[in-house]
Image (cartoon, rainbow, N blue to C red; front, top):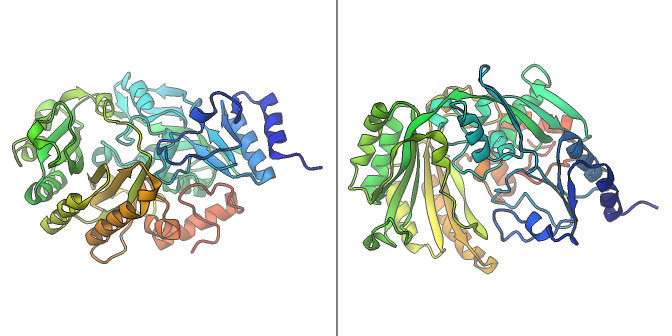
Length: 459
């Protein structure tokens, strides 16, 4: 008789270095939770792996039983890919070690470490790798999908600093991967996400980044301010990276009461250089309007990742598009849609790109949109699933209007449950064909499918 999945999960406990958490465990409800809490799924077990050998055992179990496998680093997937109904969650959060080679300007880090933990550890040596903009994001997710953060214009994407990886493939084998060993897999990992295996350790390049000029600048939102801010950030020195959020001002203590509920631009920025040069670079943005709040100051780099995260949302409608720029008409469209939004939190985020990211050849990695100048991320956060059609329609309408009739590219990290369309927006045809060949070699049966999924037969 073939053992049941429950029996085999029970057998897994004996030789595991980590922990197996089943439905009868008091930790279960917490262990199965992901950032977008509306994905209230009940896996057969959550396995908190301790090392690559644990990961290999879990991968082999999923392959042998046919159980759906969800691999979770930080659990921030907008599509809820960090959990599963009835399958196995491979939780990497206990794998959070980091070894820093300050002289060699690199670090080996396990992929369950968060961006905040990694950044704090490397900052002790005055060093950093450009990751995202959120401390709780897992390294494994962001460093394989792309990584567009506060150092993107100065040092490029996170994948541009990926030097090597340890990967557990679908057959349970543990591979050492770099530009010379399994080079096609190394190419695919840099932008292809979790499609090809479970990355358990990453070797990342480190840059000298210690004191920066950074923080939040809040301006009243108008058509002119939004368009001019994008233009100013694009024209700024590459040391300056800007992430601007356009939304109705929340009732926070540091925001004047007369601004509550009115559209504002919350610009988060980092100038990776000296204080005087940073102040000069930011001055044109400060001059666009009288600030509602100005918290930009000299700081140590890890400080930009602290204090930004609010309570986790249940659901998020929306997607992202990669475009060449944003003019006054597009800014007017954003403001008009924000006025009609009914979600408790609706926002449009603008990430100004270019710089070092754009100088990497388009075929050097699986990130296929190096020439994009701007990422526009549309999001509506809400609590009740029955509201989904209303908020999806709002986000889709705004995205179409900003796309101007075209089918724009997309960044993997902010794509939700968009199926084949999302895959084709994230990967240009030549990139997708090459990814499919790598998928056929390393995961032909699509064991790793809870992601922006590239199938072996994709064309």
